[in-house]
Image (tube, rainbow, N blue to C red; front, side, top):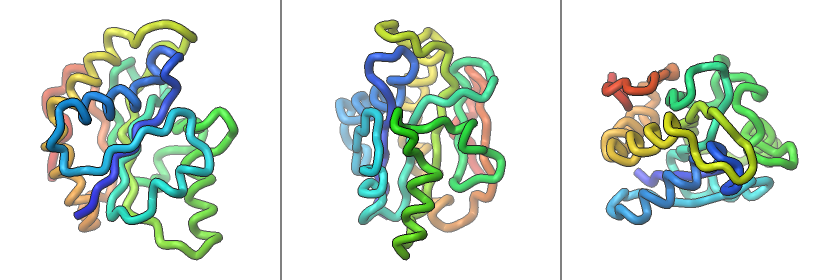
Length: 176
């Protein structure tokens, strides 16, 4: 199964850099058996991220009101997540909902899509990632092989709803 991991975010805005940092650490670690892509403030190139993959895992900061560092693991599209909850992956008002709409309009088949959202605490320009978000980054990188195995379930259509993992929840990424 060909899996692409797309880290999104703004490297200069505190916790918003989380997707980029996770992909950077996965590259340094090696042996992920995935295509690793970074898209700082992506736009239409999100469409290119779908090409040739069976499953695409988007990693980005989210703001839903959950405690900072909470991990949201959700197949997309999801009725539980509104575009406002996801936030735009781009400062140019282009995000996952727009990408999915364009994919459908072009008659292309989208691969299975999953969002790993990390609840942010701060997006102040020039600030480092918060302690809670840094802990979430470490958890994702340490448990990435289990997360990769979970994506097989997504590809088989056996993972119908999202999961929420509060900071310190050792059950991430969960299972069936």
